[in-house]
Length: 125
Image 1 (cartoon, rainbow, N blue to C red):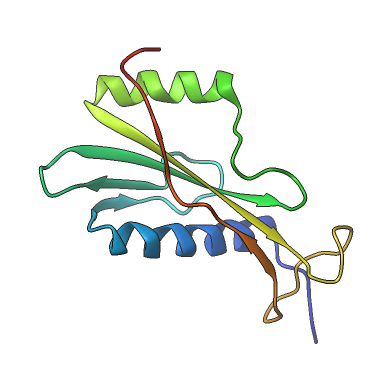
Image 2 (cartoon, helix red, strand yellow):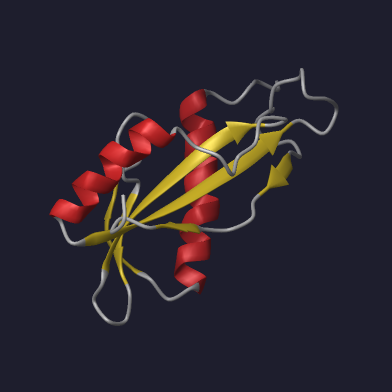
């Protein structure tokens, strides 16, 4: 029996996509937070031991996955500055190939719009 993915399952799917991208880019994971309401989802370091806070967000298409709430992000960037971390944002657009008005169904194909990770400057804001 097919069923619609929950918001938490959509979040897990987005995190999986972003996590694989981070691994390919050589990041090492320090912490992972899979709760939908907690941020960041990933705390990583690069080869130079620079800390990164990564926000992975599932966005239902046709909404733009590459935009974010600027006011909330400014608060988050201030938090990152306190921890000498840089901020990365990865919006993952997900949709049903049969139409925007239809839900994403478990174990069925889905549309994916993912342009990769965006670096957000924490120093100048």
